[in-house]
Image 1: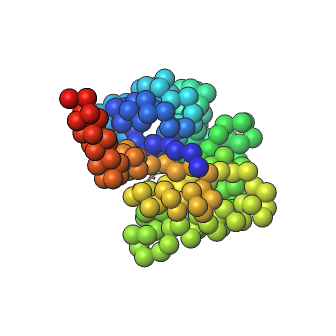
Image 2: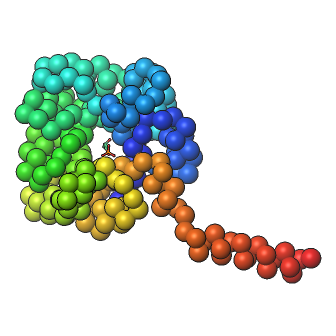
Image 3: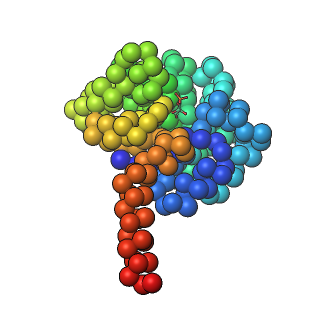
Length: 214
Ligand code: E4P
């Protein structure tokens, strides 16, 4: 499973990129709204740092408008992926982008049937939202597992991005259940790296080393 970062914050993206584990970035209107910059300028900055897929979400709600907006976003850099909401208009737009070789990420996926439709429309990625399903008492990981099984049975090459990640256990479970990618908030990426026994171990090794070399 690969890692994307789920943020529009340039410091977070730069730091995660410097670690060397980043394969892409996802943004959404809520994440962009937290930043005090123009969306297009921020996408230019992000794509100058990260060479993998950078998802940019359309705001339009009708297919023709989504297509127009998406085409403008796609001009920003060759690694822009157009993020489209899971609606009938969204599917029409995905089909049009796919016919033109523009990559797409269908977002706000909450059922296996939505994922199957998106894949059949030609989506490059589908983004099932784990955390938001867990929040309402459903099982987000079970959805990843079901989508993965369906895509395998039917040889669909659309990749599954585990989205709405809230904690490290989501990552392990998404990896075990067939997600190709997890898009992870910066805070959770840092949590993945840390373990108190690692910190204690380093402290002890250094203390022993210093004793010997006193
Ligand atoms: C996915 O691409 C979305 O940006 C994101 O994962 C949404 O997560 P949230 O439920 O934490 O807003």
